[in-house]
Length: 179
Image (cartoon, rainbow, N blue to C red; front, top):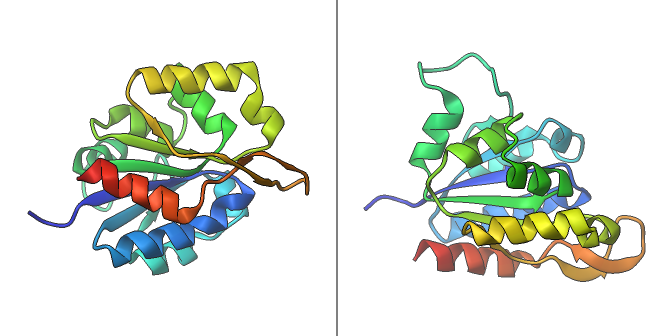
């Protein structure tokens, strides 16, 4: 059996830089990673950084010209063993719970049969909001797994729930799911 394939979805969060550590740790454990980014995530971290660490092309465009004639979100979804969204914003979590597919990540998740692991990162007000909590429960009910968030220092400087889980915990949970 070949290397396990993980799609890492990176959304627009100040915690996006942690994707580099996640990639490095999973690569050291022998996993192949393909990174998908939202356009807004590119305001926080560059595709070049993630491509250099993953040693794979980084995808962000829903309608980029294909290198081979494949529908990208379908071919990406079919070849992965796990989709890991880290960091996952309130926007992405709430879109997924409602079945909204308006970017490459959300379309790939909806097309995939692989397990989905979500590592939320957002302001505590957004995380604790009733809509976000209901949507997290909805996603858990259909089998999506979550790791974190934890209490920690947020982008506002305040301490609260919404801080991305420790990289070691995210990696441990991804490996557990892939066993």
